[in-house]
Image 1 (cartoon, one colour):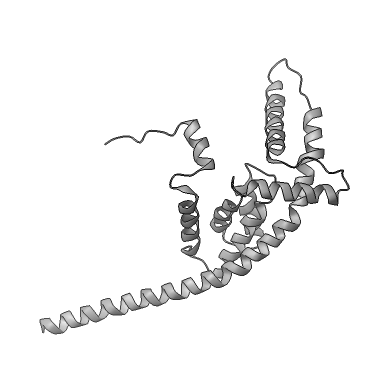
Image 2 (spheres, rainbow, N blue to C red):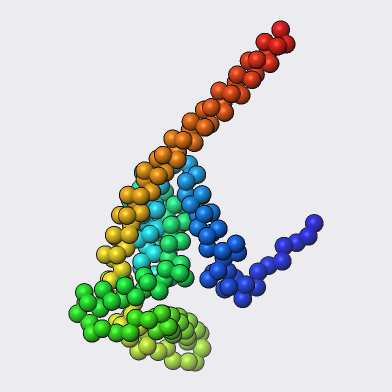
Length: 213
């Protein structure tokens, strides 16, 4: 037996921005998994809404956990919530982040600031570096620095968090309204297909027994 070669960090990073098979195939796979979840359409739709809502938050790295928690609160399907966070991907992120930051600055009464993708990515990268530095400073002789994180929270994270609520709720409501009837129709059609297969199988068995006699 040949062992599967583990993915390199560069390959994993590349596939985050462009999955194997392309975004079209990845999207079809997510939709396929959502439709075949063994749960009522209403619960699946609530899970999808939870995942879509979380996609508009700046809680990167915690989207899966947050979506599952919200789905649990609203009694939605947990796996559907996790899969629906796929809405927040490198293609949609520039639009989500820009809209959320602009609305957040307006709601909080802050002056308009740069909301282009380079600025946002750089801000999160610097914040991640500062967090890691402060954690390691506990075990070393280095001094923790909080000024950069405070600035990040004030200028980026908080506006992003506040500004993403309304568009997140709007997108979640649209996702719920669209997914519920689609999944309901799919489940009904699938039940009919399974019933036809069962009836056909039983008829073939009955015919076979009659032929033996």
